[in-house]
Image (cartoon, rainbow, N blue to C red; front, side):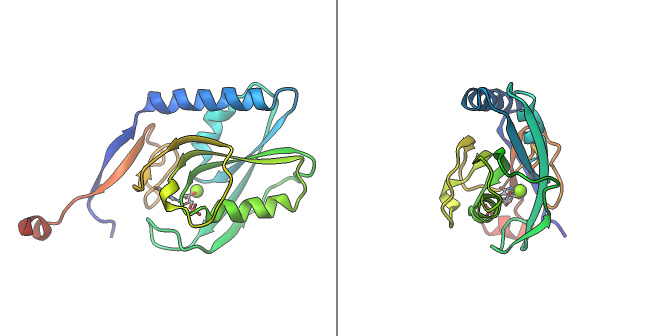
Length: 185
Ligand code: IMP
Ligand code: MG
């Protein structure tokens, strides 16, 4: 059963929108005269990818990929498994991987290696959130929305046990103390 918890706002909806506009502007500048092929990492990156794509002014194409890392709800285990591969080849394309959050870095390090073997013209990474303190595997990130503290967050695509993806802001999951625990304080 999911532990009793509540959600506290960490980054307001308008702050997220403003930052996504800035990222869209930077990407549009950096890819001027080219097109960009966005790779949305399902499911968490769906909301961010859509919002970002609307703000990119160079031609955009999109594909989707899904991987899973086994483990408990709030921890990734380190084993990355490909659940759904891309529909189309990326050879010769300017590929931009769109991720919701980078934690240990294992998912992206694995994906970047995998996609690099397919010979894209360029391969970059854009993440909405980054928890730098948690990094286990080094990974070069080209665009970051917000660097955040080591807290478990939800909203804007991110889930806790598949819940809260639809929150329009970034929230922190706060676990409520049990009556026994609070009696000890
Ligand atoms: P990494 O492979 O450890 O970098 O894990 C990245 C993946 O773990 C993300 O794509 C998320 O699916 C998940 N994840 C990591 N931190 C959080 C969080 O705070 N909230 C929700 N999901 C998270
Ligand atoms: Mg994810």
